[in-house]
Image 1 (cartoon, one colour):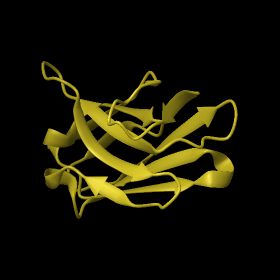
Image 2 (cartoon, helix red, strand yellow):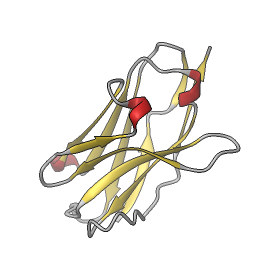
Image 3 (tube, rainbow, N blue to C red):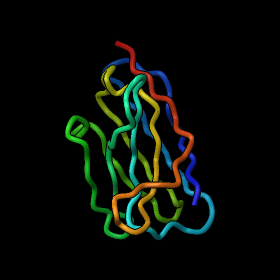
Image 4 (tube, rainbow, N blue to C red):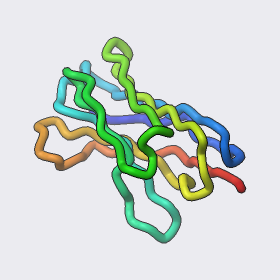
Length: 118
């Protein structure tokens, strides 16, 4: 499977964006899909994940309550609704899958840039 991210852009602090992550190829049936981000000069970090079958969600503490991850099985797509964006949310956002539930994410997309101005 290969993922394509979209929906990034430039937004003012306090604004919102919705990112999409669409999987190409056969319908995704793996364990979970996650969103990650990488800020300039920093390592890529986990943001949120969703288990494909159950819909259970997990969030990095700083984004919990502001971001919502969801999925549309029929469209093979995972979304990340981001509200109350802050400058520290700036970065390239990627999605990836963990087919077997080992926590080892792969099949990384090219990412989508999110820039939050103060």
